[in-house]
Image (cartoon, rainbow, N blue to C red):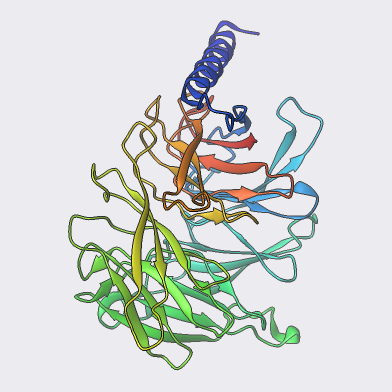
Length: 413
């Protein structure tokens, strides 16, 4: 082991010890105290095979993790698609680059990948492609050497550009997403890509329909990955237009409804939403709360005869427990929410948190910091988390780690 490696290994061990000590100090002394979760790095990105992942991971069969890096991937350094396979290595995982973006097929993927119903990987890029406005792509057979990356649609000014969020797939294989900029009214667009018949899926482009052209003065810069309910309604967030941003719904009929507008200066939603079985929406907003460190919020559907959704702040961050929650949330079977903050925490590198439902007879959601991130473990997690059946959480950081190109990590509860 050379001196530099030894110094970094020592730094990581000291950071882990400080992290454990900080978490132990934060544990309640009451009977409901819990053991500190175990945080570990499962991959350090080095730039050559990708760097700076902005999105979370997707969990496939047999524990395989899939994701993207926004930059890196020589020789073009336009980003990559990768997988992490469980293996007998020191980290427990083996990294493999599945695709290196060249620019002509898209560049700088800011969203991760979505697992299609057929096992393919689906995703978007914010720029590049035939017209420079970004692409929607599909990778078939990602676990097979015969895998193939295909561009499904190239985007340009007239139909919308800069695909920050990912796509969502319906039961027929069709894809829905948002372009955050341009379009007829300059506020971006909502689009649908129709899956062709199987015999014609080798075509370069899937049929495109623009569902909505956003007006920049009303709704603009929709960066989120959409969600879709059983009735076919699409839900998303936007950071521009009215107020400090808003939550919207597009019905299959084409009717667009603004469900909530964030007052200017009281938060801005950058990530997508989560919807539970009761139709309640959950999300995060940066810059909101009493200290402007960001909030976790819910939106409850209106009662019969009303059109007003009820906004509730579930948790306001204070900087010490994190700041700038820019990623989406996930929920377990007990209704506990999990997410990340990009900054703040003990080491100013962001946090991973859990938010439990109120105890019987109580009203307050219970926040718990699961990990404080630092330079050694990676910092600035911009995406969300994924959780396996054992309750293990997986995520990424956009910088820090052994090469300061970000990391993939896991947290064992």
